[in-house]
Amino acid sequence: MAERPLILVTNDDGINAPGIRALIEVMNELGDVVVVAPDSPQSGMGHAITLYSTLFADPVTIDQGPQTEYSCSGTPADCVKIAIREIVNRKPTLCVSGINHGSNAAINVIYSGTMSAAIEAGIEGIPAIGFSLLDYGHDANFEPSKSFIKTITEQVLKHGLPEGIVLNVNIPNVTKDAIKGIKISRQARSNWVEEFDKRQTPQGKDYYWLTGKFVNLDDGKDTDSWALENNYISIVPTQFDLTAHHFIKNLENWNLND
Image 1 (cartoon, helix red, strand yellow):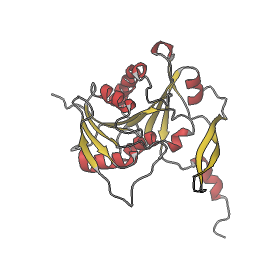
Image 2 (tube, one colour):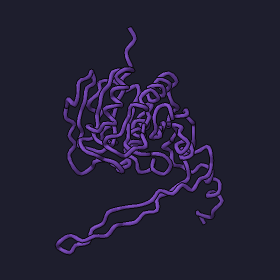
Image 3 (cartoon, one colour):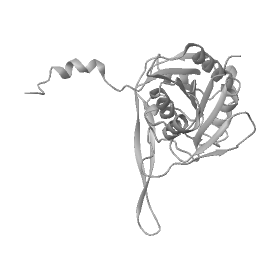
Image 4 (tube, one colour):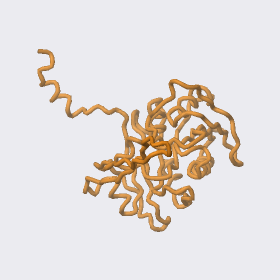
């Protein structure tokens, strides 16, 4: 009898978040599931890792199911590292991260703990997918996304992914019938126009809340932002090699060694 795939599940919203509970449910249909996820929300942590404090990874039971679960005191990237080195007894066939509460499309991928966990798995040579739903609410409805997540995951299990590539999947917050399909996309050019809401403590000490507005600078119809605005699921193949290969020749023409 063929060995079932070993699927590592993680996220950045915390092990109790509804999104990861929905993802675990889908993955249990496809393989043997090990969950290693943060014990508290870690949104916006990017690829941070824990260097100067202790890490804990404790067995937990959140709900009924065949999965094995660990609650980790570290970041999403920490969760993947400790899962691979200390928890699983064989290399995962696949790592899935999410389902994130909110968008990780366009520039958001840079800040995303969800995608950083997937990228960490990719660095380890494990095919990986980050899933996000464009609903930031704790009561987000993940049911419409489950069949699409299962289909995408099955295809990755079937075909694999090239070395250095992970998938960034974003799902519009609409009913299942309103989803028009899946678009293979590129990352939209965008940024955040940020402001700080300055306040004072009762003792007169200044403190700040980060606020901002997302600005899409890209009018292309092949981007993740366009796909989501038009009720398509977007899939962006994402690489963690940040080298600007097209600029290497230009730099070689500079007089840097004179």
